[in-house]
Amino acid sequence: MQSTNTSTWRGVFLLVAVVVEGLGVQMVTSYSSCVRPMAGPDCADSNLARTSDVNDKIAGGHVAEPGSTPWLVSLMDTHYVDPVPFCGGTLISHRWVITSASCVTSYQGNHDNIKVVLGEYDLTVDEGWERTRCVNYIVLHPEYDYYTHHADVALIRLGFYIFYSQRIGTLKLPPWWHTKTNEAQEDSTSGDLYTIAGWGRVGESGEYSPVIRVAQVPLLSREDCMEVYPEFTNTMICAGNLTYGGLDSCQGDLGGALASDGYIRGVSSWSVGCGRPGYPGVYTDVTRVMDWICTITNLLASSSLDRLQPCQHLEGAREGAKEEPSNEVGLGK
Image 1 (tube, rainbow, N blue to C red):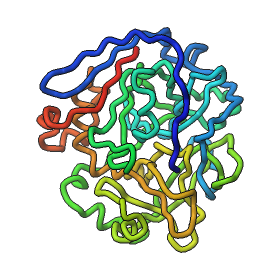
Image 2 (tube, rainbow, N blue to C red):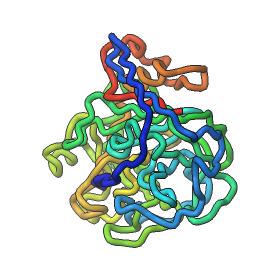
Image 3 (cartoon, rainbow, N blue to C red):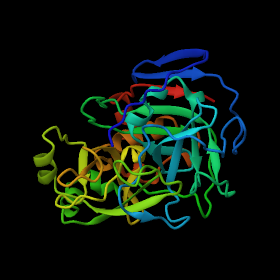
Image 4 (cartoon, one colour):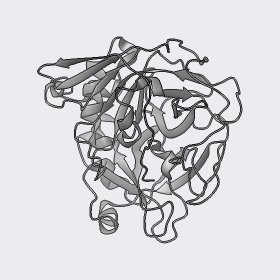
């Protein structure tokens, strides 16, 4: 699941940095030719002939039914002649996608090189459900640590609203009370099964799958996770079969959701290998970063479609905007 983006960047971008005093938010404006709301030649290419060396799929699991994971999006690197899928993400509203900070840290200030594809199922076929969006903002959690993966989460604001369909939908944020108590953490340590999905390898050294694969993995207790990973922090949860392994997110699934009952609980972050016995996958705990999510989505909201329903229940979310600055906010379109 660990990956390093080795892409080099080309081209010249006109960047205008605007620092919002008092918020600690750095906004970077770039101009690009990508203005189409739907998939087009300047936003996407359905002929995905290449795959990147950081792409790995769900280890184990099975082929998903078309439309069964409508929240899953594919992040595409358009720096290449044929766009390359490099990470996953989760649609949480008409405008916002949540993913791993590890996925997008290299794309700050380079928004022309990243596109979001929604409604995707088979990467080799244009099925007509796909919609492509450019990127307005990339926001990393202010506590994200590249080396430890602490707070490994980021928000992407789409350049144009996306409308839901049979193949495009959202996962809800955890109920607001999960962030106020430890009930969710404690109640979820009894082996409850969660869904993971993505477009990576079917095993650590397996072949790439052109279609979405899914698996069900049990959430483990914090004690079990810390025993395996001494560097385990309070923004992390882990899931998988400690004894047998076999089911896990892999590198290309980075940024995808750990989901259950229509809610997102975690964001795929890292692990040792893929599906190795004794080494579960590690995810960023969404319940631990809800205040930050609400702060950013409220701060950058331009309409009611930008606001997330659970955020109205979080006390102090607006006040937190002055206390939790983002690393960078990139404005691209």
